[in-house]
Length: 206
Image (cartoon, rainbow, N blue to C red; front, side, top):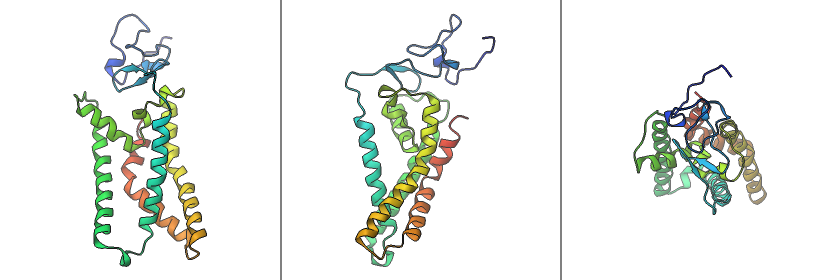
């Protein structure tokens, strides 16, 4: 009770009586770092969850992520000598675009008050760095910064068995599939493209 903690975001602790926090923030949590139940973190403030908030967007993102991962698994293991130049160009451009998005997400980590509509754009870009706060997860389940950090760390390891399962299904159709080789190729490509995201996820608490 006699320890003082500094708030990471000044708006979380606007001042006042001891134990007071910003609007819709839980005063029982250190440095007012968690939103009250029924609200979600929008960066500087906690906004009430709308009545239509469901797990639909999160499920949609999961399905889209699995389909995207299946597409990547298929593309990176094709024979480059049999691919058209336009497909190679599209694949290269997609990789560069993802790298650029992750680089832009670095600026979201700065202690800077982004004005509208840049704040919305930055929040959207942060979703590409495994930041699921953008999808208002706290409106669906009980969510804390610790939960968010753990999820961001386990996403990458969980992708490896998913890729293996996709390659196993592919092998059932094409007997010539070499699972160890294609697994190494796919996982290496994923880690190469999303390396900035993995670094940002590990350094998020700092």
